[in-house]
Image (cartoon, rainbow, N blue to C red; front, side, top):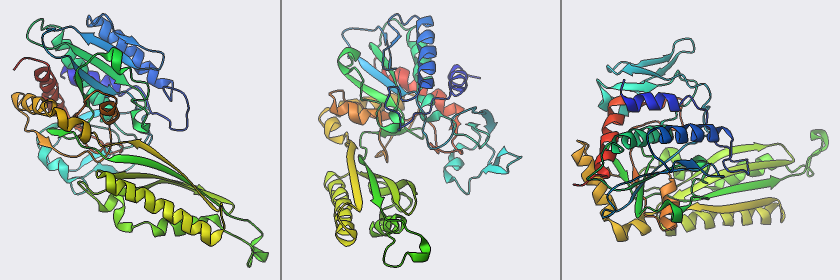
Length: 401
């Protein structure tokens, strides 16, 4: 077992789910437990300034040639609330082209018919779960790859850049860059290691917003409800039906944006809907927000002012506008991939990373692959061979070439 895989298996034993309902930073104390372990490991590697700040952000420096640029490598410690990250049972299986039984007792299989991307990993060793939790490759694979590269870089005293390391909390709930100390981080530019399949290189991401919609009705006994009851759930369904069905995640790809209903709770008296809104194009992004506002206004006109209340909040913007003036950071990543035997594929992120926010905070920050696939899912997996190749890519990225 290679060092990067050993690290990864150790890191996924930490349950680090973030919680968007919390107002603390980190949003969950358990993220600090991984952060503390990372600081101890960094100090053991000789990274003398390794530390975790009061907000749960972990930082450290690998000294290098001061005549070369200072490069940052960033990954996030939290995992998605979309699936449990507790008691992850990870194991390694060789992919032979057959369906992989994740959990015999529950009849859970990882099938190529469901996930065609498996075909390109024939003969590789995949790290999978037992089908009851996510794996946590998003983004503990990025942490493992950075830490393994850091161990190698500490042994290379010449021919490499100074490297700044950072591991952030709460990326999955859109807060990973909120309290990031860009000034003291001290990098000229950086890379988040938070992408997907090997070779992916990303400097475009969605413009993003979140929406919370509260629908208020009027309850009365159904036996005497005629012309008196107002069922908030029916209004909520009406609202959802007015959004374009073709602009849902399951019907979009590439640069196509969407409205995604992430949660709905309610009763006759009150119903709450939560959406995320995404689009790479700023004008189309603005149109989506305007459409939602117009629908709410229409329903308030129909059912009475105050029947529907909209809370709309922008989350982050497309980093493309901040990366294009300094495309050398993308070119450097491409060359590092080639040097490591990886074929680069520049693709738009159908999501976001800390790098999007950090780019707008003055730290240009494209996103690099980790090798993981099926993120936020019980069917998440990552090839061990790809993790090793990405570790080599990070070493190349910070070395002279």
